[in-house]
Length: 465
Ligand code: ADP
Ligand code: ASP
Ligand code: MG
Image (cartoon, rainbow, N blue to C red; front, side, top):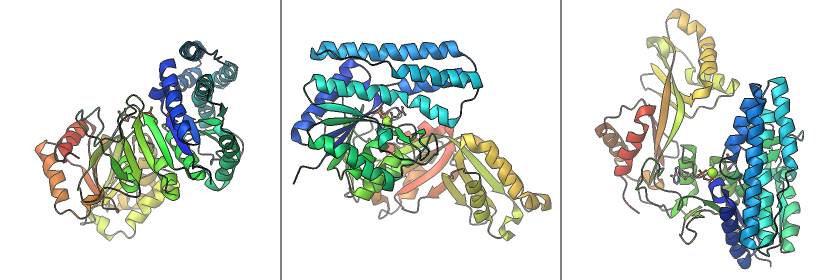
């Protein structure tokens, strides 16, 4: 039997320059010496942000800065190609033809003064479409047969532009048909991360940081032995190192812990990447491309039980909606009506809590959905507001959700007390509390201004691993 494939994804900082691309190609070369490899490339660091800004400029009719951005992107990739040539001693060309298509898309936005989610996806797709051929060229220059592959030929998604979901039934056979013949011939495919295609043929994207999900989807379809996510930190840490500089490396995480951490803001991995990995039982391994000898973090079904809280995460940009009123206890199905309303307008409720007195309901939603959620709830409960059973719908921003995560929390007594003691001692006021149904997470809402203090105070209670 042939060896299983391993999938290796490189994030933007790991492909930020010619030097970084060559070092990624060398890591791929080493992996390819052990067995068949499929690579996934993100856009060069910062390019997606530049593309999205260019689209916003074009929408305001400011075509000059949008064109300057295209030129800067051209220059960056040209320099990368030259640097790869110098480092490898082999000529590597940058094919700028794609940039004409980008310029046309931006001109279209500017002419219509309209930036739809569909055209935004097309514009932001160029980062990966430009980087994957460079990574592939660097591999060929090192003597590793390689080919760039546009993920849009394989990954079929729904049409939720900006956060599209993959249709695995349709995509898996396409992925296998496209990639297995290449790896069987000893060719290393470099697939564009982040992008897909809707059933009607439009370019879609899987959401910011979505290249992780591309890698997991390929790994699941190809029954890979592992999906390695190369990034700029040693692995998944016990907290965001930008908030807690002495956060420690977590060598092993269960899928559930990883799902809770990434859902509640650990940016090191795109949350939807965990799902195909679970479904296929493929381990995700997070490693540092700047220090590749490190062990990294292995995320698999086998966790690290019995350790209580293992990590602290936080998400910003939330809005706290509350419904209060002395007469609410008598209103039937109120929670169901709240959820019915948010579902109807397509707003996702990140956290929900109902006081046992039934006089207060609180929900946390993305800040961007605040106005339409308040309007829809006001409308839904107009009768109750008129009769005075409910005081009205209040919204507070900016709010953050802080979460403590660990499989072992379930069997450990007094975890909640530890969490709220620590937070209280830091002088942080907790707005709403929810315990996830999986019981390996306690999450609570705080004012955005208290987010960092709450994370640091909670992290102090963690044991080193
Ligand atoms: P890439 O470009 O490789 O996809 P990202 O910026 O998406 O990298 O993710 C890596 C970053 O995630 C790290 O540099 C770190 O600042 C941030 N991060 C947030 N929370 C965590 C955490 N718990 N563990 C590790 N990194 C984290
Ligand atoms: N380039 C995309 C982003 O910046 C996807 C990714 O890097 O994973 O969000
Ligand atoms: Mg990322």
